[in-house]
Length: 142
Image 1 (cartoon, rainbow, N blue to C red):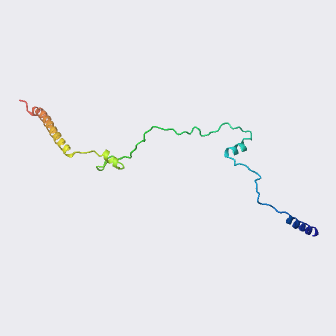
Image 2: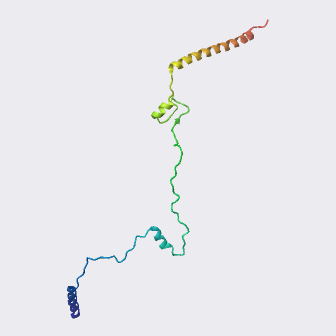
Image 3: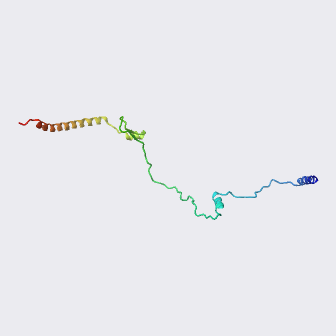
């Protein structure tokens, strides 16, 4: 116990004499950060291995291309048609103007009238051409 008291007394006397200056600081070990490649070489490069090649992404270049956009449209059909509408697809203002035909009803009516007259004449001529044969066959021989 006596020795412990002497050491304690000695430490108090020394602490009064010692003044630590904390205003100065310095770094004991200054290492820059290690990148992944250096870490890999340091860990695996010394174990009987050899680096064969490195892919460095130098072939990744932007090149201009000259291609047209591919235009697609969705369409549907139904067979047999149960109604007047047997095909269709999504509607847009572009589709309506390009797909819907412009019909001149007066011109169509005139064409159909003329075509019907021509067809009527052709049918009458065909009927006249076939009737004499029938009449000849139907007459009794004397």
